Every structure is written in structure tokens, then in C-alpha cells.
Image (cartoon, rainbow, N blue to C red; front, side):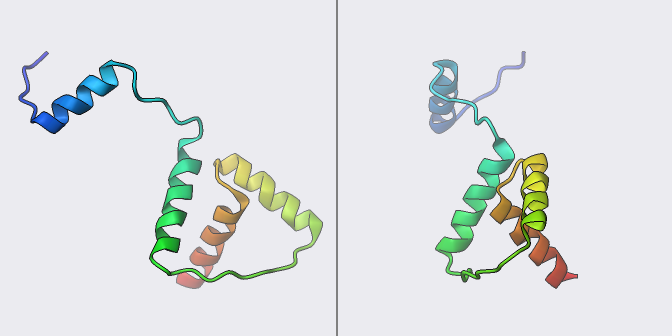
Length: 86
């Protein structure tokens, strides 16, 4: 391997990884979506909307969300955003 100079922060991070202090995230994409959602909410850019869907449509949305590895809410947000942005 090549010798690489690390600054103190990088050295501390490397040591923590080598010491097993980090744990893998089981569903990375869902975690990313969740934290993106937190960021949007923290910025005050969201408003709650209540909708009523046929059970069949909701079941299909839930299945698609599982396939995508995201929450149903995140999938709906993405669908609405894609629709209004196009």
C-alpha cells in the first residue's frame, strides 16, 4: 500500500473504524431517505397533507416501496415531486 499522510481528524476516524466502533446500516437507502426527510423538515420546507386511497392502491404503493427499500411515505413524496417537477 501507499503511505498516505492523514491529518489528526482522519487518523482518529481511521482508528475508530479499525477498533470496530462503526456498525453497518441494514437498509442504507432507507436510512438516507429518512435523514434527507429530516433535513427537509428541519429547513421548514414541508407541509402535511392527508389523502384517502383505495386499499388496493395503498397495498401496491407499499409493495413498490419495499422493492425500492424506502418507506411508503418517501415513495409517495418522490412520486409527487417527480410529477410536479416534470
